[in-house]
Image (cartoon, rainbow, N blue to C red):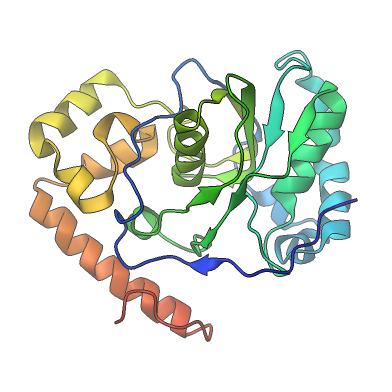
Length: 265
């Protein structure tokens, strides 16, 4: 049975770097597996809207229809000693149910365990957000991590990879081992989660520690698509200006949905 939660999560804070620096990357050794390159197969499914809105039965129907065959096809990728874990929010209703159901399906196919104790404690409103908005709204996590155990991070759709990177940072910083990533859709321009060394060197030379001051993210902990996006800026001031604009855009987008301002704009 899928878990039901009654306490609400905290809305993301104004200072994106306030709750700690992301220092641990998704390990380059972590195996990345995905079933689709675009999310069309999910979005055209009749159960998608309700599943995305938090309906567990709809999520089960969707995963059964579009993912189970693909999971079986990948069953040699991860061992039964792995723990499959999805970044789900501790919220009563209205939060995407697909990742957790997908994780449970993976656990069944691989004969492995799943974790329901690690939860996302901040709502980041990444749906419809662009790259800078995603960097501005970093999720936080809470829950017990089993020391030295191998975790496989599970999600429905990833593009920039920011949520998975924060999730990896939390697990690695607590003594767990991120062994792999398994997502339904990898929509990122780069399918790898690890940036190339040349891009990292450019960012380190151009910004030094300024990305930690701006985002709370160490250069070596960026995903490939985050690094690819940031290398397009010429100066730290350009990034700061774009971030300020992104925060305004976030508040406008959320207020249009009846959600109070996050950044006080």
